[in-house]
Length: 420
Ligand SMILES: Cc1cc2nc3c(=O)[nH]c(=O)nc-3n(C[C@H](O)[C@H](O)[C@H](O)COP(=O)(O)OP(=O)(O)OC[C@H]3O[C@@H](n4cnc5c(N)ncnc54)[C@H](O)[C@@H]3O)c2cc1C
Image 1: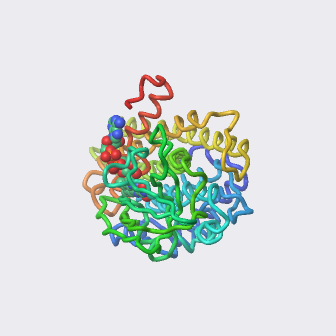
Image 2: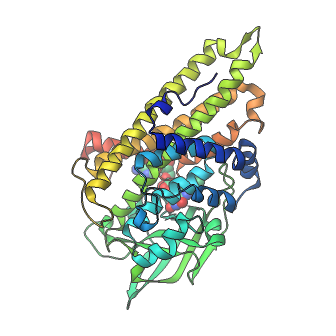
Image 3: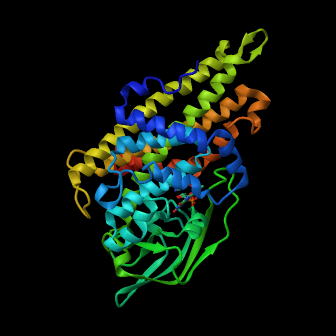
């Protein structure tokens, strides 16, 4: 018996248990290990039936309020869903494409969007008919969001956008299904670069938007990563998300929302890795004993398991903070401050989770491949798919590890730790 869910079932509400059961039974038919491995090898675009299936379960952007077409789930529910999705698909393509990108950013887009953007893009994305996401990273570097070089110039009631975005998740799927991206551009003159940015919703089929060739990523093969160049792309001013000059701060909020779900998904990846490898070491006999009887292996297993349990508590804590924050701010609002927790405090906890959870999943997959020996190095097991997929969140997707450390150091050491 390998129990990677621990006492989780006992902690869940009846609705959450039902949600877990329906997701796992949907996955058994539609997204089993064999299909995940095959999808990862075949490459993008991400299959539409999986997107539709998850949408039909009501879990894409579940946190969006019902009056905007969402399921009105709590962040605690959505984080649990992300955990289960990471367990179902440890290549992390569904977790990235649908949970983190669509849900984290979709929720944030919905929060700041005009009625028109909501109707045309957010609602269809909730129904699995369109793709929405974030296009922040530029060729000169993704970590320095305040240093973005794309520009926006106002002409009448339109904005003209120029610049290049790169390493963007889901561009080819978005092109195929329709949708668009949260794009940040320099629009203002201010005393600080952070105050010069505005967020826009840019439809993928905008005139002047040229999609660039997709990358051949090490993992997450079923989800495309590509970019686009904006040559005088025109968007109506109703496509501004939130307020002029507030783009940096709103984008940080979007990163928090997406990073929370990535952290929870990465916990699901560790769960799946430990389950798969746990079964193997419980059965395989070498030198007359089961591998699990050797402390060299069982202690390593225990180490990962303990860290997984701690990170589960962390994401639950963060999700509860988010629930309080958004309840206090009111939904939907364009400005406002949560009373109980400062946004920076929540950002610190989210940074802890975003740093540690993918790192743990990557290390667990690495060690699990060792426990299986040669078998772990093949696609007979999902371990190498998991290792390659989750690495994307260690190196950069939604912010590299050092960026999370900067946030944690700034909040714990104070301003002295700011490198700039
Ligand atoms: C699979 C994948 C999908 C992605 N999807 C999206 C997407 O949908 N949308 C989007 O906008 N972007 C996306 N990205 C890009 C991601 O946001 C960037 O990779 C990330 O922001 C880092 O930017 P960079 O890769 O340009 O690295 P750089 O910013 O050049 O940083 C390079 C390295 O230096 C570190 N570093 C940077 N600054 C400091 C510092 N001050 N001190 C110490 N170390 C530092 C970084 O952590 C990193 O390890 C994706 C990336 C990947 C891998």
